[in-house]
Amino acid sequence: MLEVENVSAGYGLVQILWGVSFRIKEKEIVSIIGPNGAGKTTLVKTIVGLLPAKSGTIRFKGENIEKRPTYEIVKKGMPGVVVEQNESKWNLLEPTAEMASMARVLELLYVVKNGEIKAFADESPTDLAKYGLSSPMLQLTIYQERIEKPFVLMIGDKDRAKRAYFAKVGHVEKVFDVEEDLVNNILLGMNNLAEENAGK
Image 1 (cartoon, helix red, strand yellow):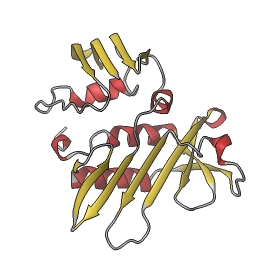
Image 2 (cartoon, one colour; image 1 turned 180 degrees about the horizontal axis):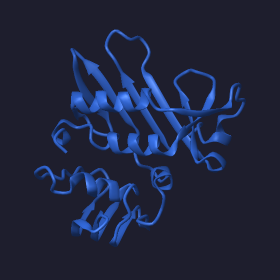
Image 3 (cartoon, rainbow, N blue to C red; image 1 turned 90 degrees about the vertical axis):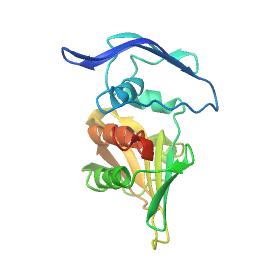
């Protein structure tokens, strides 16, 4: 499903990844471990398009994605994330079931709740499909203790005219635009929620 072949990447003149290669089959779970500074976060950024690869290829479901923008990569089937709080502890329910890092979850919530809305795209939408929200490219669901309804954030298609993404929260009717940087930060945060990733 995911193939990383001889990928190198870094920041400016500083190279972090040197010829990384691995394959992940469908329904297979692979953990990437290493000390702080080993390049785990850099690798995730490169795979999802937040950081360009200097060389090598990245294929998802047989298609090269290393030069595609992040929103197109996510559209191809990267999973949504569901997190629940139970007895003050945080657990990932999707895409895998495991303990989540409390610090990372709270950090992600802070990013989401403090993100700037660029504009309201449609205050009374009759068709969410035209915004890509009937089948969102990204969905974050968080169940918190003592709060009846979960927090649900849906990110749809890109609003190219405003360099933003269409978004919607839970049962709120309005469709609004959010900054590209906010979506990129959410994507990065969602990939680091597991407890084993807390030190990345």
